[in-house]
Amino acid sequence: MSEEKKGFFRRFREGLKKSTRGFTSAVGGVFSRGKLDEDSLNAIEEALFGADFGVETAEEVMEAIRKEYRKNRDLRGKEAAEIGARVLEGILEGAEGNFVPGTNHPSVIALVGVNGSGKTTTSAKIAWRFKETGSTVLVGACDTFRAAANEQLKVWSDRLDIEIIGSHQGADPAAVAFDSFAAAQKRNKDLLVLDTAGRLHTKSNLMEELKKVRRVLGKQREGTPEERWLVVDGSHGTNSIQQARIFHEAFDLTGLVITKLDGTSRGGALVGIYREMNLPIYYVGLGEQPEDLQPFSVKEYCEAIFASGEE
Ligand SMILES: Nc1nc2c(ncn2[C@@H]2O[C@H](COP(=O)(O)OP(=O)(O)OP(=O)(O)O)[C@@H](O)[C@H]2O)c(=O)[nH]1
Image 1 (cartoon, rainbow, N blue to C red):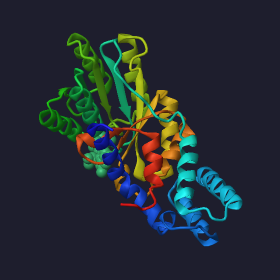
Image 2 (spheres, helix red, strand yellow):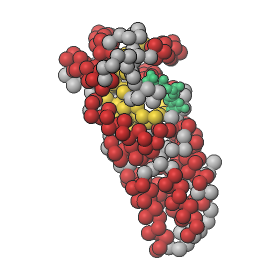
Image 3 (tube, rainbow, N blue to C red):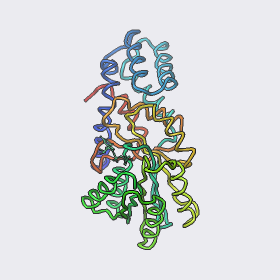
């Protein structure tokens, strides 16, 4: 395995460790112990329900483990963990998003989500990631509600050498989106990332505002923005599902980014969100540094979740 790939796996595991700690400590390391018994099976079941996977997922995983246990009373914790990881991988089949900027200069990703979910930082992190791999990128500061969002982007832009189209508080987000797209086209950028607001000043509805952003961009180039990703705070657990539905209805989402998986014991919620939305997860946030935003890996996620408390 290449050094770079090893680094990626390590980061994914490290970031998810806190997310999985609640899960693994609840099963008391039962997966790393020897043969299973009824008590340890109950402990696994309890932990599965506590990790916010959702009832359906918890039941499916448990059913597979119990089925194997009925056939083989010598089943070991490690084998049960492998069964769990496999079932989860099956459930998450198709969840891995893979984004590469197209040839349509610029490809456009619009990030939406409730305030505080991590849109601004995610915009900067995505821009940095593609800049590092040789793409030319522009970020549009369409969050004109929160004065600090524009400032925050400026700080990131200075720190990471990312080009942004700034805005001032109270400006029309759709106008900023328009200008950003025009600038990205003019400068022949590979990628334009649009940060948007999670709240608005005016009484006008946030969803109406997002629809307007889409309408305006669609007039500039049909189908733009072609990537419409919802940024979800992973630590909010399955509570995020209702919000996700509302955004989906208004903005016809094409993908998900799940942030803050490093700071929560509810990392299982990602599964519930995917099951409900059935949209690819492009990135997961595993910390505050730019490199902590990682492409989602089903295999890594499932293995990290069932890593049985091994350090
Ligand atoms: N630990 C951790 N913190 C994160 C992650 N992603 C974002 N954050 C932090 O979450 C906080 C909110 O992020 P923002 O990017 O400002 O959120 P926002 O969605 O733009 O918020 P609004 O502009 O109010 O809509 C910041 O302090 C980020 O540093 C992550 O993956 N892990």
